[in-house]
Length: 556
Image (cartoon, rainbow, N blue to C red; front, side, top):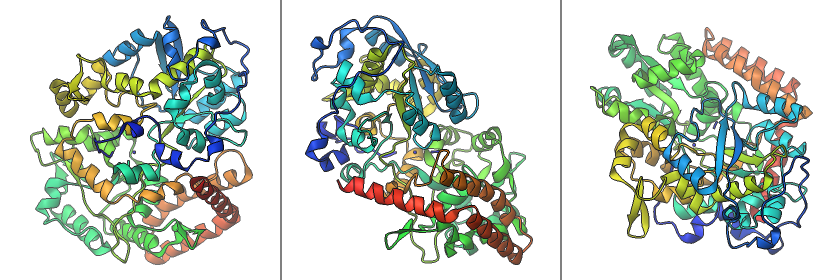
């Protein structure tokens, strides 16, 4: 849910490929694209050009810029942008001839795509979270094209811009690659560039934290003491009650994986996947939250608040402490800093730590990326789809969509593109207008390659850079391999894990609201017994197999 990281002096070698860090690890036999195979598509139209015109060193979109409509499903119900109204999207359409009709799910993306698969009618382009079970269903069910096969037939330039590292990481057992990720990072790349993509932070409201004397929040005692001080001295703000604590994604994310990362709980010990749920430090901090609830220092609003309530409280600085990704504050912090109370914005500080006092080990980016974009076999325009995807993945397409048209939103400063001052001002003060009118920067992030675009970002405002720097400093660069080890889909082990996860969502609120520590222990032990009965051993075996496979892939 899933994410930051600037270093402007990137080389052309880095900007030429997605996730280039793995490319050096690729065996020579993997450098050749798979043999050409005609993609199966009963509705396919004949391209206007011939394969004889294709040049692997030239982008093929230039061969046909006639008008064409492509539907693009973006698997995020909260994505609110459209195509054609903003300057950048119009610029791309005028240049390539491709007009995009964006679609978003009305509910769960997985469910909506599954229904579309059943009907046999899918959008031309599909972007889904890399963790979504529907991704595997699309691949294994033959609903999407192998991108390497489309590239062989319609646009071999794709192999130059996609990067062999990405193609290799997402290559399936049949030798094909069906999706291209955005925001994909390899450990080698992060070490080389300093860009970690870490966005997990522990945030506090700056003015209250400093008025309290910058209390130590890393120990249970300091944490509880700060909450008590908040209750005694700062219970309301602008006539509204303060919410002491917020955890992003509540039980499944903020109070589990995220909190465990803050506590630097290991993912494996001696090569074996570690059961982080039973780690003594994690259990001790869950008991700390139980104590806070018993004393009336926190309530259960952070477990039950709707997205609307969270947004309202955040925009009005009514949270004191937050386990929250700093990128989610990109629009809010500048707004709070420009308000009547300019110190009411949020800063990253050391939050809960383990009993050894170790710094957090935060998730960085990883090779999986955030979302994966695919081309469905329902498209009547496979040749235009692969060429459009290639264009958007290339440095030219990244620049057109991220910066907009040259001379209007950016200009060259020496040998580097630079946003115009008025665009930088909008970025810092009115990002909603920037996205709606101009559509630049992160408006259309579905194929965003941070290795390319981060070199064009202006220096962040101090109220954002402080959080970013803090996250980067505590990023555990090599831990990206542990993301997404859990089984997904319809297999028996995936069903076991879904049942265990659902039960944990029900149990954790019971733990926090338990009347005393003895009740906490009984509830927790009962959960562990049920977990075993649900097949937890099989889940751990699956994680181990997946981790071993990832290590082998990284070592190639």
